[in-house]
Image (cartoon, rainbow, N blue to C red; front, top):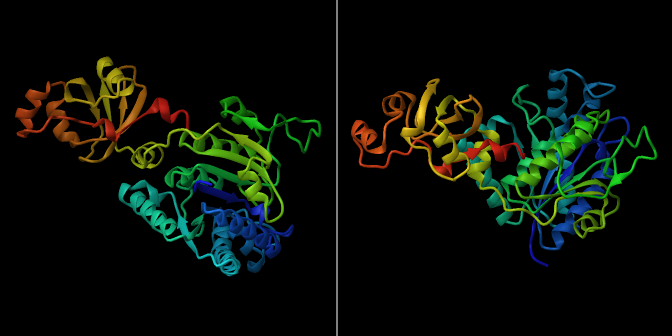
Length: 374
């Protein structure tokens, strides 16, 4: 069997007892299943929730805290417990595990994004099983991944995974809420995620987690766009992940054969970078960069908004004011103001350089039409 790269996301409800504390028996079963999947020769990356749920009882809370500071304190206590439990259990299977705590801020800057990619690549090269969670203790509201479902989708793209397995307490995606309507039919397979399905799915999650089926469906849509197939469902026993991989899982499979993966530089542009300015272009330039795969030249630029430096990311707008994509610029806003609307030869004279005057190279560009698919 050819070696594949598989990301597995385990939610809080699949790791804790009904009072919210960490359930060692559940964790042991997950580790056994992960170990069997890894024994087949695959690269395995674990996205694990459970830090807040594992820690809040030790802080005297009777249920998962609602306040941000309460959640962050619980995560600080629970993360150590969670990692220690995982590490001890993986050692029984001769597997070395490693922890990565990420916040959205870690991925905003391109160099930090590249560092995270390099670290994960080296760990997998060394046959280590990475365990990733959002760093809830220090994450800032408004700059979070939202939940570990979306984090698992983004990591799937980052490591170029062939499959994302999202384990939850519901065995797949249903046409109606199965907890309310026991006659609701399940989707066993979906070729893609239509926007109507996202609107239809409930956003309510369990009492110990943050996500619901809606967040899982949104994560699946992102993972598909980045090139990974997805499974959403449940399972039991040490063979559950192998069964899921072999197409025998109890849940919903999403996506046909994996699509072409998106380059990491494009992923960073589309999903993580923060634009610092705007460039408006004419119809010809809009067509060239969004539909014809060409670079943006000064002649097509009609207006500049904001202040930015060379290598910053900017949004590009068409004459109607619609965002058609974003890219990394080769000129500051001041320099660009001098050469906008000029042909390349005129721009070269002003900038006093012999280089071709490319404002945004096609390799540093991501079209909004593709981002909408994410």
